[in-house]
Image (cartoon, rainbow, N blue to C red; front, side):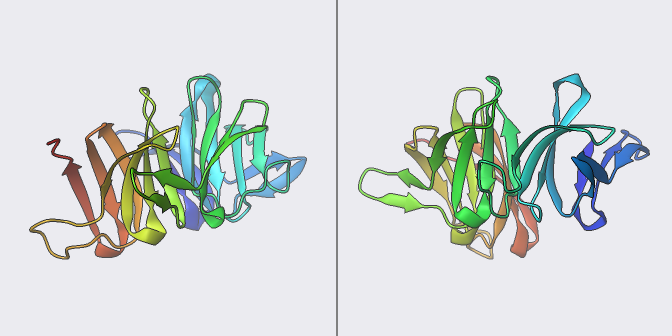
Length: 209
């Protein structure tokens, strides 16, 4: 298991029985730099990691020695503000929850911006994002967003087409989401949600009419 241990400013790999296998807290970004607030980490091929360091406005692909092989943000060509999650897609592009800019941004493998998503288009309205803290894209292109500032989960396509939304919890107090910060897409109609300020995990299924 990989852990972005933000408060301790480190990335940790833990075995199934709970022992620390390896960890690091510094990266080589032209010079040694301490991780500041790593909020998300994902495994990449070639034993590399994709790390989102919110405080440094930086998403980077690194190895376990701390060498940086790719960097997005950090005063580079793409301006990020308080990013909280990043995922590398099959084509090598990276999708980032650029929280402080109220958007999802997609970056191609060489670091150029492909697309910005700041709203989702429903039939009769446009749902603007507000401090989205997490985004994940499934293999079929279904995208799920923890739209934290609006206390909701949005499921949509990469072309910004609305699929469904979840914000109210039927028959289970408290009735509303409060600062959801993470969501896992099980399939296009089923998610697991970290409802942060309500101190609970929800398993939600969208009942298709």
